[in-house]
Image (cartoon, rainbow, N blue to C red; front, side):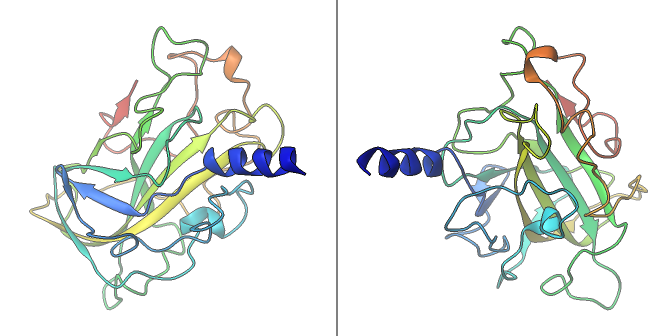
Length: 234
């Protein structure tokens, strides 16, 4: 029994949530889940493994009470509840809130999401086991594209844990969505646009993958191309 308790505690410590957004080095939330929508794993810390589930969108338990102001061109990341120790990429998406709807209640359904940041394994690492910001208590940094039009958006972060991804449904998605207003934006046309669920298949090579067989040049991140193409780090 003592061994089982220790094993369960170790498993919980290996998982994480992303309850606070940081913008240009300054916390956008003075406590957890203020502009970031509380996720269903707020207590359990477990990830999503079924990419066909609606949970793959925001893993949402409830909406947030506030909205963060985020300038176009800003650097963002998330504070993690525990160390982000599993290998795998961090990806960021945005979805513009339709006219007449509120960022505090809109659910982000449909082909409305564009990806603006993804990652490759670090060059010189052991297979695909080493990634930007791994083993920190935050996600990797990303930049809101300067050409993003101003307006209200849902901002989605995901870190895909790939340590068990060599088996079907072994990849674990740790994710959250924040309510933001982008200011000082440009006149770009973000895309391609995808839906969650729908953007990923369980057999995508970046999801069903043996990390020992990928490198900083051969990993294939799941989902659409990054907009603009500069949002890829390794």
